[in-house]
Picture (cartoon, rainbow, N blue to C red):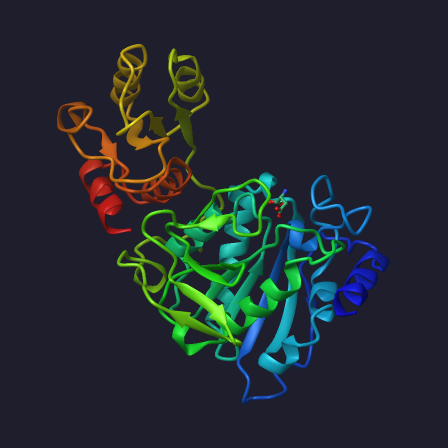
Length: 362
Ligand code: DAS
């Protein structure tokens, strides 16, 4: 019944024009016993619609506005005083630095307010892991920031968006989530923004932290934490984006058998200030590419050795003499997350020793 009405409501609602933040005021923190949680909507499948109730792939993302998402889960008002803002409306494969800066500045502005206890960000699943880590590095508050998405569109049978949104709002209003860094909450699981990654193109349990593990579960209307990240994040960050309107260009060169430096040289020509080398194995450098990496370094481009493998530590001076080459290693960050940390590092320094320390601290 509930899902049917949710689907009916959302299919009936025409997509909201998104050019400015739409502030949708709900009971404006009417009940002071409940936490005050602001939902910032950015698009994605959680706001998607399909042509039929059985369309779970091949639907259209980023169609439904924040007001409809909130109205479709009336139980939210039992767990928090909720307000909504439509920050932008995109399928998250289109996420970029401009959107990140807009979102991060709005998050920091809201969290500085005494009447905001936590924030939920509804987001496409394709780049949740990147936005989560970006915010983990630039949010200047210990208050909870929870990113949520869905793997099925709002119009599908057993859509996962409503329960994911409900859990995310509870988590964002929970004292237990304070000081835990940016969190990603789908499928009743809580993962850390630093390590979480999308591991399946379509299934509900796609968000995993493969070896380091999830932080806890959402169950019985509350969070159950068992771990937390040991790395610097949020209020403890040295990175400040509030005065920035752009970020340095950093690109990723993917490693594979038979590769050559064509892609690397193109990125250098395009003005990259940093290169993440997503090497095979322990960040290995193919002989066909190494000279071009050395040339790039000589031009002042910071080179980070990461790995396409996805888990484990890329060891400094392991597969390459990083001391001699003046390269940085990514520690356990996958290439797409290493890119984010290098981008932010380059807003502060080009010194590779300082940047290497950042990769060991964040
Ligand atoms: N295209 C996907 C995105 O917006 C849809 C989704 O999974 O949210 O990330």
